[in-house]
Amino acid sequence: MPTAAIGIADATRMISWPREQVEQLLRIDNTGLFMDSQEHLYADIGVEGIFRIEKNANNEFQIPLPFAPGQAGPILMKVPGQPQWRIARPGQVDPVLPVAKPANLELIAPHLADKLTRPDSNGIRFDKLKRTYVDLADGGTVLIRKNTQGDYQASSTSESTPSGPVLESIEGMTLWQRKSPVAEWPASDQAGPGPNQRPRLEQDADGGDDGIDADVSRRNPYLWASWGKTSQPVSGESIQIGQLFYRIVPKGALTGQVPLVFLQHPDFAPGRFEPFERMLQEAPSLQPVIALRSRPQVVSSSIRPFAKPLTHHVGDVFKRFTQNTSRAVAKRLFEASGSLRDIDGTGLARMMQTFRHWEGKTRVAVNKFGDPLDMLPVAAGSTGTRRIVPLHAADSPMPLQQLNLKPESSPVWHLYKDRLDEPGHLSLLVATLLSESSYTVFLPANAEHLKILPPMLLFKRNNHDKVYFLKLGYIDTDAIEIHPPSVPELADPMLHRRMSTEGHQALLAADVHGDVVWLIGGVQHLPGADPSIFIIKER
Image (cartoon, rainbow, N blue to C red):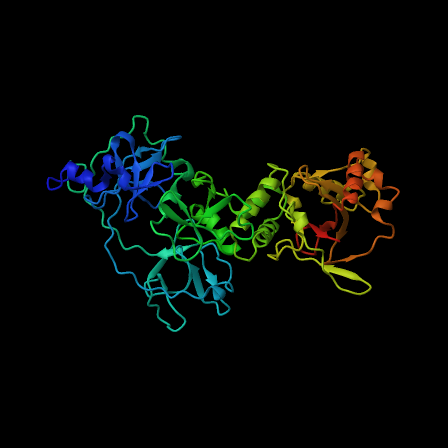
């Protein structure tokens, strides 16, 4: 409760807005949210009134209690289907932190940060001289050194003793932040009302704690509302929703053709693949939000473009891809979707559509992105009379040049790993891995025909027009020599026996339209290394 000096009426006026004056606020679409001229947010809580709200560290809307320092006010939840909010749970006591003047941080240039190693499990990155760096949650990369107390402190290359602020890693993330000072907890309020206690806002009878463990997007699908500004940004692209202006990710090449834009979070501007992927892994609430371009502007606020990191989107569909292959495919898709290496709205839309297509939710594919195999470049090798193509190891973090599948993760691996030299066994192993990675393999009706040499497989995806012709082999070197076929593949008199009748017809039909993709692959087993399945594009 408020103190005697601040009565209930005065306390309520500090955090609420008179309903009869609601027209003085800027209405944010049909969300039940409003903004005043000082860009403070308010929420309509029905019979409770219209209350001032702020976003807390857990991405929830919370009523602030300025008259009760140290007290965190009630948490709000959106009422489904209505432009109103309700009390999800009462406020909780938070620590009171002493105010400290922030020290300056000397960030390194982005092009230098690109040359550092990838963050380890603690978020530490290194340069060629083994100096340590970390990425900050609020953007940028900084050099760090340990001080005499054993804490990491921001520093610069021009000093040997760090003079910047003390930093700490954020639990569960590879990002770092300024280290918080020791908290001073307020006195317990169990003895009764006092100056640190909150005014009571009646909780809905069915409110309980049902929202405590709910997904953030379900608890608060309108976090984007706090991104708006009362004045239009002087730089960059923006749109107006209601009476507020929202910065958007640059539209890109498809401006005017795609009926949506992406609202940009104030604290994260989508750029290159690595920071975008890390954002999806560690702070997905910073990703852009879809806004449909209609009149008036309508925001699909409960839907974020990506439910997980891009590498996971790939790996969850093509389950036998190695981790590095899934990442290489995701990075290639990211960089090729937009017009530049930095992603734009066109690129985000293309990636969303590509993942929907790969997941089998639509037959409409983005040009050149119908399948990860379509994105493979033709294998580059030596020129001259012999075409020798180098292969990189399955665990090598190389750009997309080949696909690698992990055979040891398949339950059939133990059936074939010691007998791959027996006719038909290599084909059966690869066919199983492909089937477990969302492909349909056209196996012959007679299993004996799998033993016809040299081995090959025909396969495709159900919602994609391309047909993949894969020649198979077994190598124990780091390169493969590609020989032109003595007889064109489609002229092979045994071709129709190597696959099902349906597959043979699909192959001939695809060849008419130029939809056959010619591949070479098999097992690569280098001495002292685990075997892996590789696939490269022959032509």
